[in-house]
Length: 157
Ligand SMILES: [Zn+2]
Image (cartoon, rainbow, N blue to C red):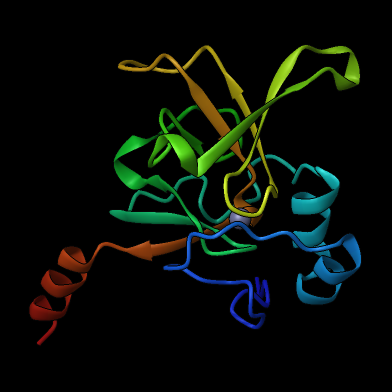
């Protein structure tokens, strides 16, 4: 599960400026698994992500660049085999692109900061948005909400 995520200069959870690297540069800094999903629009096998049934409170980030993508309170159990959310953390955190590959008309979602492939968005999600962001777990990093962490630590002291 090592994404070599923090080992390159473009990775930042605070810098929101756009990241534009060549395929060769990405290849050098991402693990082969992450490169395949993020830059070659690969899809991980369903039900393989540690995030799929993950219910901790916190924030999900782009594993390629550190951009904040989703909050845990918009995550829901879709049963589709991939981590699913009904809304992104902000309007600009995600890009939407038409995807007509594989004989389907779908909407691809990419990271708003580094344009890595995340997954697709479908219109069969729960209220309030009715959307289902179906995301490859490989491209997600998670950080527990600070409050939860504090409570957890107190409990264990
Ligand atoms: Zn990114």
